[in-house]
Length: 277
Image (cartoon, rainbow, N blue to C red; front, side, top):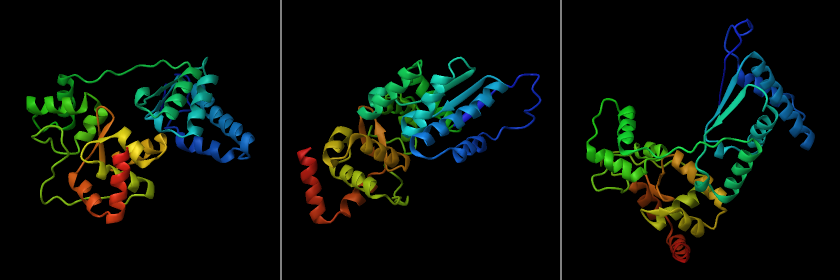
């Protein structure tokens, strides 16, 4: 979270940076934590801090990946949006497109947008030329061939999020396949919790290309919980996302290790679940 503001020229109170985190944490500590009373006490405490911010000058609150926020955080944003409409507070938030979110999360985000009268600004995909500029920005010392740029554009669909994930692996010569690391590169497999381990091994059984819909049916998980698990695996560099709600392993050796380490009985059971999906 970032908060920026422009103090009035006649306000000498801001001679140094404002400790935003400390101020908001103080609101959390002072809130009455008894169920409903605690909920409104917390919201009032946060609102009081923002009242102080906007008193000093126009304030901008920047929130990244709002679709990942928990319900109390979304409730706080909604509360601010409703109660600061006539104040110099602008809330700018990024989110994945609504169509890419699981239904429960999509409905919640749409309700938030409606309640706060949010203006939606869809971001179009990057063009091939813009993908080249993006890659050059990431690697200013490297030159990318037109073929590499075209391949990156094709694999990512012009989505900067996917481009950043693709950038974690070499651009393979044979198109959109999993990464082919250097032979001597160490195999990195982070420690996974039970839910993420089940997601990863089921994906390994499905194969190199993993449609999210197939993974959902095979795991039997709630859609929102599975999406959260996939997000964690993407963040850990185990999986990367591709256009069309498809996943792949960032390192094919990780998929092979997960598959090979499965006990025979579990492997057969997972094959049955994947086949039924």
